[in-house]
Image (tube, rainbow, N blue to C red):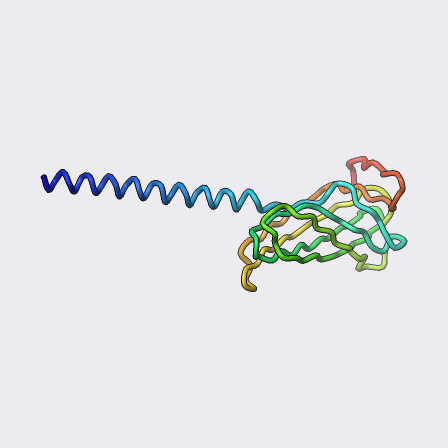
Amino acid sequence: MVVHRVRRVGRLTAVALAIVLAAGVLTATALAASFRGAFDEKDAIIDSGTAVTVAGTIGCPAGDTVTVRATISQAYTSAVAEGTWSASCTGNSQRWSAAATVTDGAHLKPGCAQGAGLSIVSKDGSAVKVRQWFNGYLELHYPHKGVVTCLRRL
């Protein structure tokens, strides 16, 4: 009878452990799935080619802080632009938009560009999640003008 009781407790412990592990995996999967970042494919050049507004959608756990750093480069003009955006996370998908300013004296022109992004999610001042991405082809254009289609060669 004592052996039977030990087996029963052992089975209950194993079931409880399996439930806890499954809950942990599901929670980690949900958090990972909510964390995303990328550029929209179409962006507007502003300020006579010396800055470009890049935007996208990002999601992160409520209460955390997210910072997006963007670098846009255009090979045929040799222009490089950098910008940053930061906000408190809402726990839902949220729009971000950063004005990236040309850093090297060149000017951006309508057409193709490349973009690299870095998103950093912080909790209590410490980074808890970092993601980097690359968009090989961003279509840059002036506000309220037609979009120049990238020829997919930079």
